[in-house]
Every structure is written in structure tokens, then in C-alpha cells.
Image (tube, rainbow, N blue to C red; front, side, top):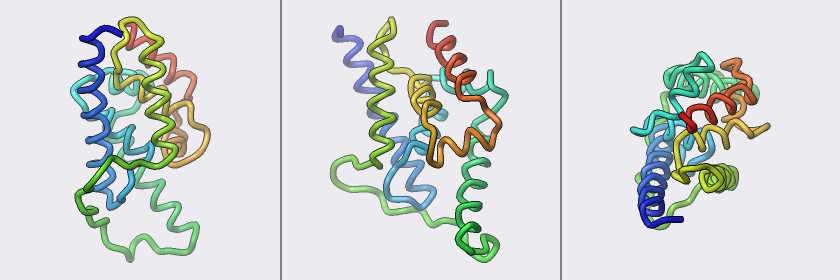
Length: 164
């Protein structure tokens, strides 16, 4: 890995992880999960994830809506009426070292491994999208299913975006 790639990737990683923390915090969650990495990837300046998502017929707003629907369905499944609960209160700003769920860490490691395997070896938001699309379980996987997105098709679109 060259110095330019390392510097680029450090900046991309910082923006991605900080963005995931912020997405989780806004949704009232203290620990970022894969769905927060997905949202962060879709809102960063690198538009490769947004472009691949658009090729699958979805937008960032669709992902936000599907995530809200997924959370509401989970609450209803345990008997909580979602009409009676207030909107989430943002979680406190995190302090100390970065902490994420185990699955979010796996997604991040997979995204960086994908970036190292590509040429040029820069971490792109589409790498995060691929890593999320590879998940079979969890909130992020449910979001893609809610949007009727076929993961292999999304992965193919993300690879095409990276190569473009």
C-alpha cells in the first residue's frame, strides 16, 4: 500500500466511522451497527455507494424509511404500539475510543479487505455497501429485503461503480 492510499484510507475510515457514530446517535442508539455504517456510506462525499444503490432502484431516503419500518416492526413484534412512543431522543455524544457492534466491526473489516483487493486500493463507500449486502441477518439485511433489493445484483452494481 502506497502512502497516498494509506492517507486516503485513513481519512475515509475516519469519516465513515464518525458518520456511523452520528447516524446511531441521531437514531437514539449508543453503539453503531451495520445499518449505521450503511447510512454513513450513503451520506459521505464519495458517491459510489449511492450510485450502486440507485442502480438497484433505491435512494438514501428509501433506506431511512425502510430502517424506520424495520425498527417499528421489531417493536410491534414484542407488543409495543409504535404510535404511542415518542421519536427517538439522540443518544449522548460518544466519549472515549470508538465502539461498534460486533457485526459492524465485521462489516468494516470486510469493506477494508475488499478495498485492499481492488485496484486502485482506495476504500470506497461502495466497499461498505458490498459488505452490508453480504449480510444474511440483522437490521441492515432486513432493510435491503424491505426495499426488494437483490443482494447479488447490488454487489454487482457496487463492483461496477468501483471500477468506473
